Amino acid sequence: HVQLVESGGGTVQAGGSLTLSCVASRINLYCMAWFRQAPGNEREAVAFIDSEGGTTYADSVKDRFTISKDKAKNTLYLQMNSLKPVDTGRYYCVAAYTWHTCRDDQGYRGHGTQVTVS
Image: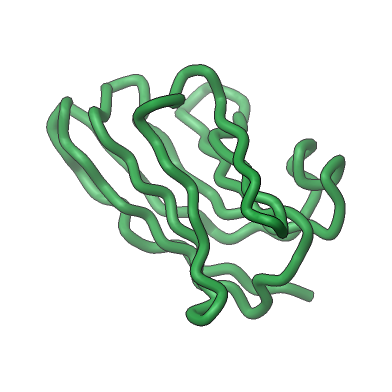
C-alpha cells in the first residue's frame, strides 16, 4: 500500500502561480501523476512522470505546468504557472506500478488539494 498526502492548494488570481506537493510513503514506483477534477466534470490527467524522469503533460497545461519529484524527500511536485480559471479543481496525486494503471487513474490516490483560480 502507498500513502499519498497532497498540499499546497489555495486560491489565486488568474496569471498567478502555485506549487503542489505530494508526500509519498514510497516514491520509487514506475509512474506518478497529477489528476484534477472540477465540479461536474470527470477526473482528468494533468501530468505524469516515470521512474526515469520522463514526463508527459495534458495539452491544456503544456508550457505552464511542470511535474517533478525529489526522491530524497519522497515528494512529488506540480509547479503551476500562468494559472487560468479553467485550472480550478481538486488536484490528486496518483502513484502506480505500471504505466497503464497510472494512465487510467487506477493506482493509489491521495485525498487531493483544492485549487481555485479567480
